[in-house]
Amino acid sequence: MSVATHVKDRIPATVITGFLGSGKTTLVNRILHENHGKKIAVIVNEFGEVSIDGQLVVRDDQAELVEFNNGCLCCTVRGDLIETLERLQERAGELEGILIETTGLADPAPVASTFFVADEVKSRIRLDAFVTMVDAVNLKLNLEQSTEAVEQVAFSDIVLVNKIDVASPEQVRAAEATVRKLNPLARIHFTQNAEIDLDHVIGIGAFDLMQKLDVDPEFLGDHEHEHDPSVGAFILEETRPIDLNRFSIWLNEIAQARGEDLYRTKGIFNAKGFGERVVFQSVRMLTTMRLERPWGEDEPRLSQFVVIGRDLDRAEFAEGFARCVAG
Image 1 (cartoon, helix red, strand yellow):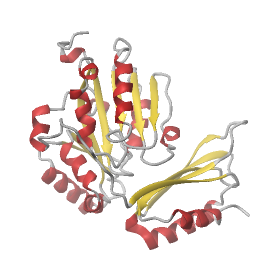
Image 2 (cartoon, helix red, strand yellow):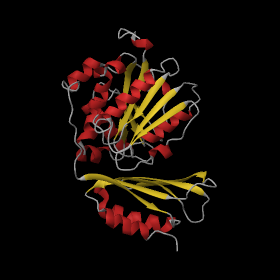
Image 3 (tube, one colour):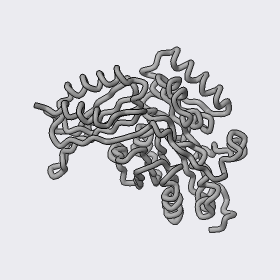
């Protein structure tokens, strides 16, 4: 296919970004569950040594899930992103869209530049829109603590102000004002549980290269994006059943003591008294748990607990998690 391929004939790619815990995976799951009948390839990335997001993103017969580990799309796995996009563009006749969920710590500019500097990518795939999720409750704190969070909002075409069901009206208004100050051109939608009409986020042709060059004139150049070295992620695993009551008490103690440094925790637990997998999600002080599918007959009942934050002691968390084992 010629580089001159008409824009509308190229596969549209939507990038979903947003700080840790804003609701990106929830949005991806909704897109995969909608009865839209589209063939969508999904690329999921997670910051840290081990990811469980590939388990939380439910697979669909019409979606292809590609998961990367050990870095951001804009950092160590950026080459893999280009390679994956090149492979997907060979299936242009089958695919109607590509969805890329970045890590919450991703700088958006290097991800966007991939679609313009890689010849084989830009000839078959077009960047359709940057969709940024923001947490209405924690937006102010996230922006204060993370340059990436600011860049994500400033670079976006669409901003979803999420979690309005648990935010106060004042927090929602403040979030909207903050987004408009950082990015007056962004289209803003207000959501709870990432519920949004797909027509607002997929195939909308919202990405404007010239506008993005105004925001970041050097975004098509080389990038050497480095994460704050004090921010880290680790995973704890346990083969014995977890007592959810003990776990909740312990996590509350940790949150009270290290609240602002504890960005995100999540897990899939083998919990005492439950035949189903228990999915746990926590952002700052907001925690949810839900029952997922039953454990498979031959599936190892392994509990995995992921922690992301600043200046956190893995040994301290490992000791506390071990105390949550059911007696």
